[in-house]
Length: 159
Length: 207
Image 1: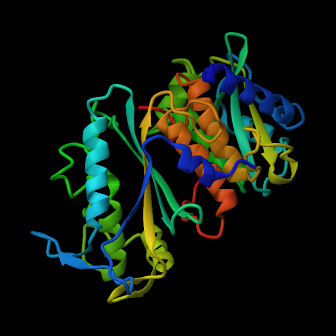
Image 2: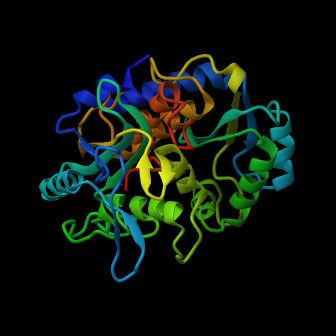
């Protein structure tokens, strides 16, 4: 009951915000090249506005949010993420294992949704706040329960 | 907007207890830890009793996921959260978290409120009294010290500080009205507190 309700909340928020604020990062089978990823992110929106971002992978035909973060330096943050995905060091070993195959090619089509603070229309959970940090934490909580197997956020994930 | 304090009062088994052992002038008692020789803030005996009761009654219950805690000024209905955290039953690598193991004697960790460094009382005491450890006092606990205390020696609180503790069971509803795991509910609580108590909350993430 709660699982399906949370899934619906998540889908509804991503639908509302994803359509106008998303960019494709990688196609399935494409090599995870850092420069290519960053070039695509440059077209996603303002680099220096405080934003919440959601990495979405198309897994078995469904759009699955796998990571949520917030930043006011989108390119700098994604420079680190892109290198992490490619190298798979430390915590990024989970990212690489989920997103890339043994040859470093994307297992799935991936998309990045970047919603600047000024474009947040509503909270993911009704009657909750719409600040970037609060939205990030609502999404982390919802994803950890709606998609526990693929969530890359360590915080919020049940042990 | 959903009112956080209303929800806090509705969680089964939740309670408010004084966090520190302080006198009527809000001066917190200290002790010298052994064998470290470090000067430490004293927890209130009621707080220790409540943690022990909640952990010992929770551990045998399969549905018990751990405890949610919130440090804050005052009590309901005027409670103002300062810090939201959790102590989970499961450890990162073990089925039972070391934070909760042998809780009566585990004053080093004590459900994250222990005297050791990397635990709340130990870190806050280091920020106040500047004792040496394997690392310097952290900025996080320097912020705690500034927010909580009007003077450091003797340590005098700005206001009475309480700890809200709620045992968390599988199937309990979070502030969203939906059942949630302890980590997911902690996120909901921080999200709400960050908006409703922005001027007092010390959590950095989720704000």
